[in-house]
Image (cartoon, rainbow, N blue to C red):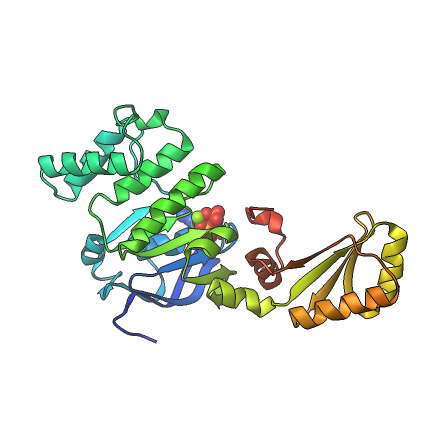
Length: 320
Ligand SMILES: Nc1ncnc2c1ncn2[C@@H]1O[C@H](COP(=O)(O)OP(=O)(O)OP(=O)(O)O)[C@@H](O)[C@H]1O
Ligand SMILES: [Mg+2]
């Protein structure tokens, strides 16, 4: 599907490095003013995709356009509407934060005065005023990411590519980065974000595509993806292994998993209220006492796992 509201259009994108077919016909569109998260494990081709879209890398086949400009033949026009930040950082280590910003402003053909003024604005916005006049090589990881993002915003482009903007950040810096990203979204910026943090895609993105093995293996909103693998699970905890055993017997095949150490059992539920009542009725009918019970909604971790069969350890899953 193609239409003018799709500011980024990628059709049948194909790219190999020698015999390594990294992208095997990728398709996606990004609607104006929205965020698409590109999710995938290490080596899935996220950075490759972003580098192609931002004109830094050639591709073998397919068509890619940004704001109606063909990435292959109108690279200059594409560059004029995008900002890029990420794993291939554009920050010069030897220059100070301020100098990096002013330099980039000059590259974007701002006058010296406007570049200086814009640099000051961004230093304030990204909480880098105190560190502004120190060389970037003395910055912490979080400060560097903020500087990297600030540099990409010198010219406030309508489209911005964020390649793993929060990888390696501590939880506090990650939250701060999310605030900054949300502010960009509120300003109507169209964003393509790559991430290995499922939680991040869940929090920020309007749409998610999951790539693996050079293909898009799933797409939708976080809710849609979760509902695909879908069912809620009910976790029941009992006082002792003996009680767990009795409960297991009473509930029979409804149980999909037990954890003898924690004296707990898990049941898949379809209709939350009805099924919980059914379980409670069975247990009280057998005089089995319940210590606690919790409903777990599927997470994007579960989705990823069921889609790729990959262990979570290959993803930097967080929050658990
Ligand atoms: N310049 C290159 N030459 C050869 N192979 C490359 C090159 N750049 C990337 N690759 C290969 O392409 C594949 C995709 O790499 P890419 O960097 O796009 O993955 P990624 O999804 O960004 O991974 P990560 O999560 O680790 O950043 C990998 O197999 C990688 O080894
Ligand atoms: Mg990458």
